[in-house]
Length: 240
Image (cartoon, rainbow, N blue to C red; front, side, top):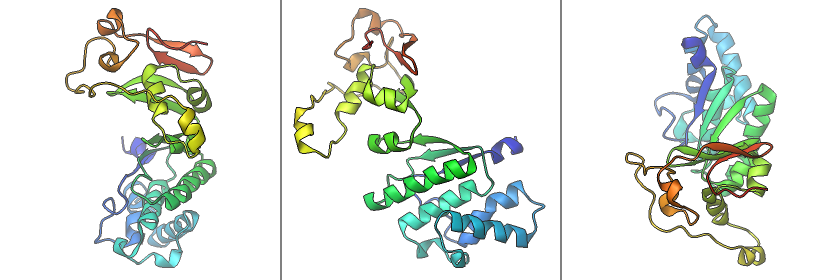
């Protein structure tokens, strides 16, 4: 299990809260190395930390500073450095930019894309921000009440959403151009989401779906291919 853990790391939503205020930045970034590469010498560990700091846009001379001395964007870079220092195969990014200013979000997304290419990383990117999802993702999973209702390559899902929930979700996404925004039809869902502890029978989206029929309320729809590179779980999905 230890070997598997080395290949999986996480970047947290709140960059400040995810860092131990009693530890220096160098110690925070080096901590995974002390766990997964205990035979690494202190000098080699420090050198690795300095290299990773430089790779994520931090000045290596800041290695002995503490988290409170950094901005939110810098703190998230520290969290990213900690996640990639062991060169994992998979990183779970849990809303990694939602707590940051918009101007900083773009910088962090650009950094993640660069590191993904440089280190050959696979990122599981969890986000409610559809613009960010579209910018960074190759493939997309759309979840409702903990269930995957649609999946596929990013461009296909965004250009041709098949599941009613995906369509409603995309219709609520902000559009910068006010003229285009006025032309769009907003799909407004009725009611509140059911409790995931007591999900409805059949399709979990059926209580709020305008396309729902009797079968939707009694039987879980199978996941079927909509088009090449896209699948959805719906009896009444939009097909090409």
